[in-house]
Length: 304
Image (cartoon, rainbow, N blue to C red; front, side):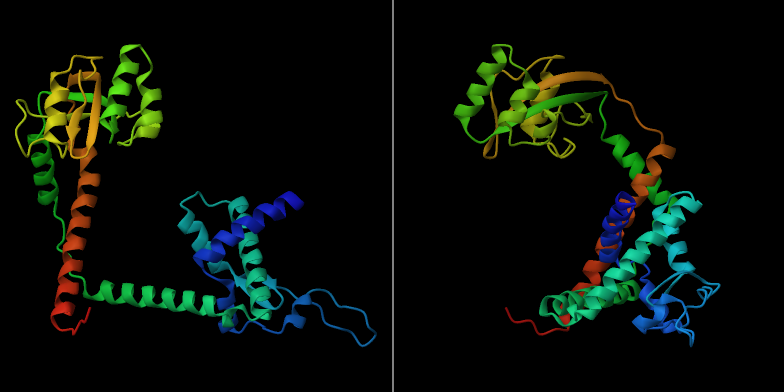
């Protein structure tokens, strides 16, 4: 029982922070708020207790007179994305009970009056109000099927005949870069050296980069956002080859290894469409947000 309650307590802390359907809302629906009333027994004149009173039909529990409505559990089940089951409902009911216990304990000690709590409540209120305003005033352009297909075609058009899988070590000191190259020439492991020295992407994963495809010969602006010197060096490396010298890019020195190459595998449109649509919708949302803020800035007096 202690282990079960411990899990319930930890989970409750998470849901308390998220404020998922707080059962305290039931108080607005006529639930009792007297902490002495939640024993759910009636005192008899002879000092003995009567049987517990039944819960309301729309409640799953009561905590010191505050009912926890079934709709709160329903909401949590839906939000979890998990298959509905009695076990899952019992878990969420336990979390709501613990959540309500914590709420009542904090209320008894007047935590809501603490300055840091008031500040957090004000910040949460501001965020909710802002989101409500944005929801009503954003006019993001809808993304059509034609938009998604055009984006897919544009991406495919940037791909070359081959795609490459590489690993990279990027450092800021040329002496360190030379040390890494010397270690590689001695046969030391590239991934281990990347984890030890690299300040570049995916260092913790041994410097492994995602598959990428370039049209060749490499031209400016057609490098899939890779630095052009890196792209040019990569396509010239044989499989298993390592760059002979560090490649200077900005304030970093890169060492590349060609892990593999293959004919470009173009994903089907049906597989790519959901992700592309999401990306386009995000762009449309950002553009609409910028327009709303721009209009507000025009009509505001801002002193900095």
